Length: 152
Image (tube, rainbow, N blue to C red; front, top):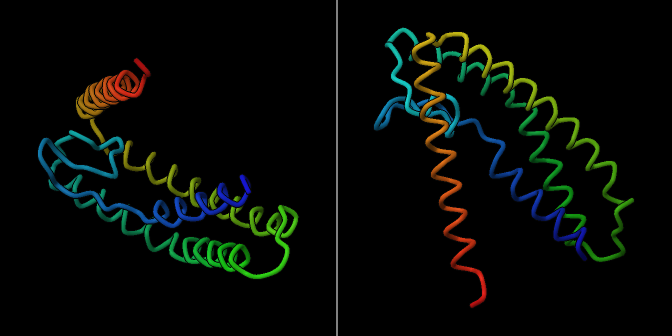
């Protein structure tokens, strides 16, 4: 039962997380899925380059994302079918999914490096500062949740 829940959770999380967020202007700078451009002010030339890189990544990974969605659907169909389902039944699908996810991650990392290489040293400092602030806020939030959930 635990494996079944894990597989369903993985399938749902994968479906939600396999899209590519496009960089968009917002308060404080450009945002890319909460990534390295958070809080960074880009020039119009950089905005165009980032947008082009992200569009290319989205196009280049479309087939991989479709394959991942198809595997998730196969896993869900198998889990919801009548009959016996074991880890061995789903192992080949899990292996295919892991391989596709690894390819997606590699392409995404390559794209992130290309975007990083567009930034000036000042922008990298700005991004690092914003990231440190976000980590601090996240840690504070976690501490608040932990303290409010502890038994009295």
